[in-house]
Image (cartoon, rainbow, N blue to C red):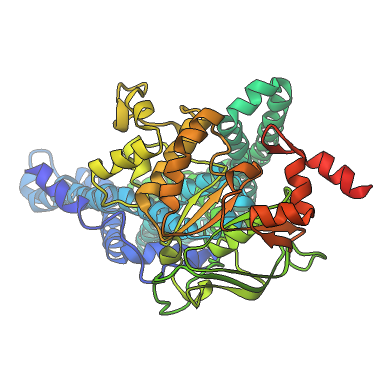
Amino acid sequence: MFDRVIAYFNTRYSPTALAKDPQPPMGLWKFCWYFIGQFRGAFALRMFLVAGGSVADAMMPIFVGLIVGMLATTNPGDMFTTNGQTLLLMATVVMLVRPGLFLIDTLVRNHSIVPNIVNIVRWQSHWHVIRQSWTFFQNDFAGRIANKIMQTGEAIETGINLTIDAAWYALVFVVVAITVLARLDPVLLIPIAIWGIAYGVLFHISMPLIAHHSELLSEAKSVMTGRIVDSYTNIQTLKTFSTGGHEDAYVADSIVEHTVEFRRLMRVFTYMWSILFFLNAFLVISITWLSLRGWNDGTLNAAAVATAVPFALQIMNMSGWILEIGSNVFRQIGNVRDGMDTIAQPITMLDKPEAPPLAVNAGEIVYDNVSFNYWRGKAGSVIDDFNLRVAPGEKIGLVGRSGSGKSTLVNLALRMFDVQDGSIRIDGKDVRDVTQESLRAAIGLVSQDTSLLHRSVRENLKYGRQDATDEQMIAAAEQAQVHDVIMGLVDPKGRTGYDAHVGERGVKLSGGQRQRIAIARVLLKNAPILVLDEATSALDSEVEAAIQDQLQSLMAGKTVIAIAHRLSTIAAMDRLVVLEKGRIVEEGTHAELLASGGHYAHLWERQSGGFLDLDAVETEAAQ
């Protein structure tokens, strides 16, 4: 029965729901309300329940006073006959009303709000961040971004629930306490007023300091996490270069900075609590003394004293609890503010409103006066007034030394970046005027930096075509000469073959195996436009030769842009385009360019083992 009640509260909200506006706003309170507002009904119910519970708790000192009064005025043997109804009412509040209010509040808090709001913040933040431009991720640590998303969900949930638990509860309790004490003797409000003003000043000074230092601490934690994750991600580099001492120092520096910020935060706590101890001592002693003086002067009876002193003790205990909760809330505010600066960044690479999907019928690609620089405002462009038309079904090879702009041209076509001048059109459609998803669905890419997801081989192969059958997947793997390799895979959990997991970024596979899986993935995707960016760079000559025929099959009927330093792999293309500093310096077939004796011919002559001897080319060109 109780499990069904819990299940009811569990399902009031979905942790993967999306907000109407997917852009979280900047500004601390707007950012928090963006998420809290999605749970406004549950939080409103919590405020009602906590207020009721606070009133019930405030009745406890009153009940103590009433019982003391009964003891002073009732003859032995007459307690229950004279005061039975009052005692029954008090028992009902203590045994039924108060537990009932807090039980329902616990169900709402623990089952409707906590798990759902924590993860809805993470989900909606991730949903927004994952749609940021490639540049966004290039400029930050992946671990740092993930840490901010993870901690912001907990910070918002903790901050709002603790505010209701502490600030709202305390406000209701103090209002009841002041009302009761004022009815007993208005003089009792004097020490509460003095204490309240001092407590408010302490809160006003210490909480912003806690928020400020918590924000700095959160950033230090993100940096520390980013450095640690960066070390794990690049563990092979660390091991092969034997840089343990250097790497230890790099991570240790971030830990020292985090510790320094932690100590600064703890110093604020120490000062705050030291002052509070003296304030609370003043409150209890002054109210107790005034109550005893009133009883001594005959203005207060024993019941009133028994009510006033417990109120003072409860306020004293509550003040430390509120300050502790308040400190935690403001620490969470610091965490939220830190996370907000990353999460709520506007997405810079947006589809135009009502952008249609790209429909590729022919596969023509046109670069029209394209200029691009990674650093806006800086002198010099990576691509400068670039013009190129790739006819439908044409296969071209881009040739040039590193930094000549080959991969940049590919990334611009994929709209990983936007051109700063000119346009890129596919079948007459500017790539900025169609949806990014449809654009990238129309282009199959095999890059030199092959990255696989830490999932099964099956999931990696079907990533570009989720509806593919296993038979189609296996056929693509066989075409890429990788089926036998896959069938021999076993991961640490005993999963084999296509169910085996490949490790983060595919680290459990060799470079050649990753490259062949990437080729199989694009074979399965079967997009009308194909980009091969050093697609066979990680393959040995024997394997490369084995899959050359399959690559020819893959390219059949498609528009192809291929990049390779190993010129033999692209010599058979319909046309070769030679780049230098973002401009075309030569173009033609392999035979035509060799006959012209120009830049390409020199590159061909200087091949060493099938690769470009770039240093020799540059030396000869300078002579």
